[in-house]
Length: 166
Image (tube, rainbow, N blue to C red; front, side):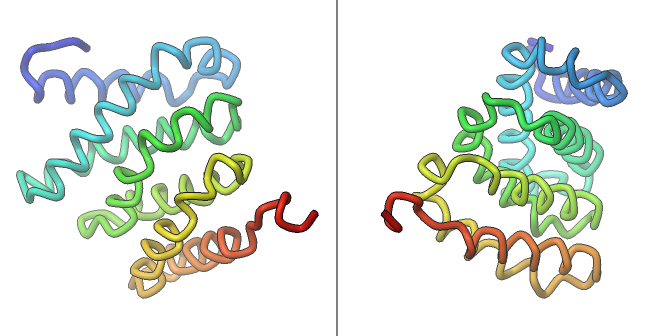
């Protein structure tokens, strides 16, 4: 996956994501240290391409495979999720409004929802950015995405600092 050509790297990663998806959580978690840098770099590259409108429709399969792989990993709620959170947050938020695929938007919102399970001390500084980004998704034309966005925004709004209550 260390191809010099970015397109070759994306194609290779897309193929690898297809192989990873059916893997058991235990296998994924054992190889998390090797997978997360690849996932992070691919997600950032795809978000950057989408923001620059470079072949934006062609990013769909790659965004879908990368976000699907991230979703599989975060479903297991590994402890290292808090370490990856800041690195991928902006890229995931870009895909919450991805206009070429409702599936990409849905998976991105579900990943943001899973971020709310990270301890608050790691997410505190990003709470306002996340809730603000979710406002745009509340008007999505797909009902399922609006529901997830509403649930996700509510979960983020209801998060509070446990130390502030003491």
